[in-house]
Image 1 (cartoon, rainbow, N blue to C red):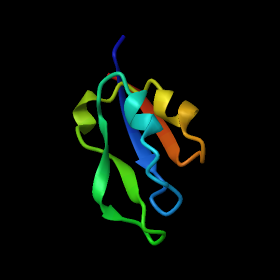
Image 2 (image 1 turned 90 degrees about the vertical axis):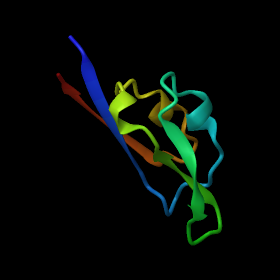
Image 3 (image 1 turned 120 degrees about the vertical axis):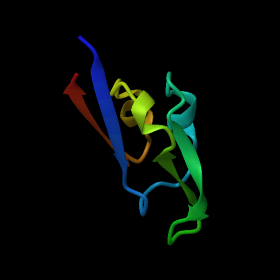
Length: 73
């Protein structure tokens, strides 16, 4: 059974620490060139089709900025 995932990042709370990027096994997450109101670049999904919904990013996020959604395909 394959899983398809998606993440939602709270961009106002993300401080761009990149821990989620390092822990993503499918290299789906990147830092935006834009910055949030606090002046930090924020994480976003650069290749949404590759996300498996493994939740590694949400687990390691120190500020709990990431919500992961999964569906069976």
